[in-house]
Length: 183
Image (tube, rainbow, N blue to C red; front, side, top):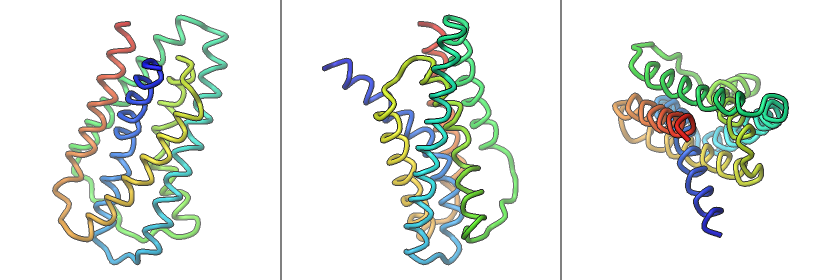
């Protein structure tokens, strides 16, 4: 029972880290006029993509784990390390985001863009044999809620929190990558 609780806590922290990307983008997007109905739709769509992408990653990770065993585990930890470093570095880039209201195909591409990193994490979790349903529920709900929070908070504040939230998420993934490599 304590093992399940430990895995749940770990997955919730990872879901938080992955959702911080959606949160930071939501902050910026929330500063333009978006109706609450659209905010609901954006959050649900991003949540669904944060279920689909890690599910695909977990399937691939389990396949790799069976084929390559211990080498796959090292690759999984290294992948989390790289993803964490990439998120931290991208949080410091001074890029001007194009501000648009995602609808239709734009919404799908936007959701894919902010959830692509969850494929890599899903790959790692698949290698380590994490509980699929638990991963998908944590990641989907976490991304959905953090997206809503970002969009709603973005309506109230300026973008000062966005950069720091993405760096925080990258730091968390980096720490998990180091932990996996050292075990």
